[in-house]
Length: 399
Image (cartoon, rainbow, N blue to C red):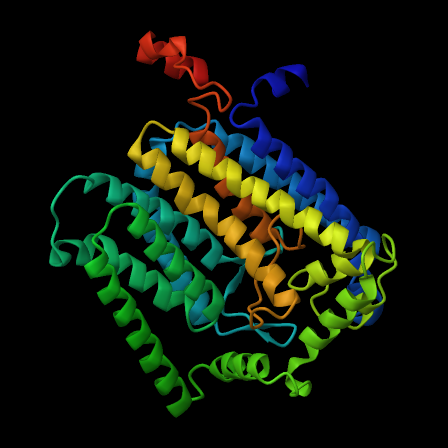
């Protein structure tokens, strides 16, 4: 164990925040899983807790393995992985299957283990790495819009369009994150405005086609429209059942909450262990618990910014921003949905909600951030003596 701990490198604050979030997640997941057991009739509470523990164990294995990979290796890996995720997205979309009555075109079932895997989450991480690589290559170069269409925007639009039919929120968040990364990477703003307009045009055409031919994408577009309409029309409680139950849970939690495991609304709130777990957390731990949890996500954001700023390479900076900020952005969206500041999106709370894909892809992104943080000491403002060391000796010491 001592040798294992010695091999843990990178930003210790990020390690600490991630570990605390993962440990805390056992409490709300165990509590909210009673909804799946006694209402849905799926498994046992201990079974769901053990499954969550195994997913986190594998997730931390991903963090440990990925954070040992030198950052520059991700450039080549993104080129290899991008065609693979495109094939997976096409395969996922072509299935047209359902799981528990929901549109499951966003999942594939892994053989042998029997776990469903959401390919869009993997595609989002790979795409952000690929874009960081491209922006690094054109840094300080004068580039025209036509030169960037095929190497940059073609993969972006293909991935987004493949995700869009079954998962609008993930596609929209990914597209927004891409624009933000390109802006931070120095891509001309005049071109970004054109890309934004093209994206809105494609979305409009897609919605019109889906409404004209509803058999192609059943229920999805109508679901998006209903969620937005119910968000702007609070009186329409019938189509806003989840938000109403979440608000009741938050209101009953008060300042300090009802206590661990003493939530009542978990038995009435669908997706209480995943999409709406933040409402259950506030019901059990109150506004104090809700704000403390938000503080840790903001602390994670702060450390991500520190790591990005301290990295010596352009690729490292863009890589950390590209894969790190979406974690915190997703967490804030999940919280905003629970308190009705945002329409229902179906986004989970990173490292807290149950669900293998969300945990694993979050851990993959965190491992990449930690890999980029291994080349500096966050609290040391002076240059390390390793600046004058032999590069081969430095690399071998890191590996």
